[in-house]
Amino acid sequence: MNRDYLKNKWLTIENDRREGEFKILRYFSDPETRLFLAIDEKENRAIIIYSDNINSIDRLPVEKENVNLLIKDDAVILLLTNPGYQDVFDDLVLSISSTIKKEEQIEKHLSLFIYKYTEWATFFRNGSSKLSFEQLMGLYGELIILRDNLLSENQFTHYKILSSWKGPSGSVHDFVFDEYDLEVKTKLYRTATVNISSKYQLEPVEDRQLILSVVNLLLDDSEGKALSSLIISIREILSASNSDISPLYKALSYFDITMETSFEYDNFRFILHSVDMYDTTMVDFPKLVTSNLIPGISSVKYKIETKSIQSFKITKTD
Image (cartoon, rainbow, N blue to C red; front, side, top):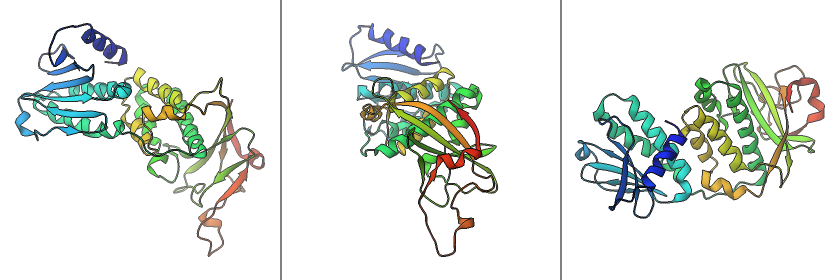
């Protein structure tokens, strides 16, 4: 099942003019998997599961931002109340259907349905904080690296690559791959330096190789791509391979970014100029880390001139 399949299902329901609270269409042809798509009288989308175990759960409705959980006599309904989140809701539907289809024990379908709702509810939350320009560029650069890694690997490793993106959750380094760690710094192409904000950012963990990735961007209002476009392109890569998208939404939630709020930054558009990679573990790479600080200094912030580290470059993508 993919987004095109789901899109056709919604169109089929919309063309059905039967009266009633919901216009309903069975999701799977398998009658034992009692999962249905629906659209209510207000044209809100919904996914419904029928079960003989409704009495085993709390019957009070749960209202979250933009998506509600409703309890009927023999059904549980997830109802989207904000059409601005339709794309995210479709991803939730695909995640629910994939999870349930893999579970052969029918009696577990209801609990899996509710678990998925609980897991995804935060992705429908209205964002509240605003990213500064520097924070926006930092996120943009990390997403560039994520996208390029997803494109360079096969679909079976997509979840592993998503799981390697550790920066949003507060890890020491932005990406932790099997072979090395990666710290991402993003700057405008003409800027001569990158900012290092702590003594840990360029410090290797357990003698692992630590690569500094410098993402160079150009501001371009006409030809550039906004943050929202970059997120959508990553989502399309994952959707095309039927990969789980929830880790992407979870990572973005640490920045207080949802699909809907990402469009608030559309006035900033960038063109990727280049990505320069440097081996920070080579002898004489200029850095301040715990191992070379004078005793008594507890924290540092500094800049590295990129022209001074050209001899440490290991790869370049234009």
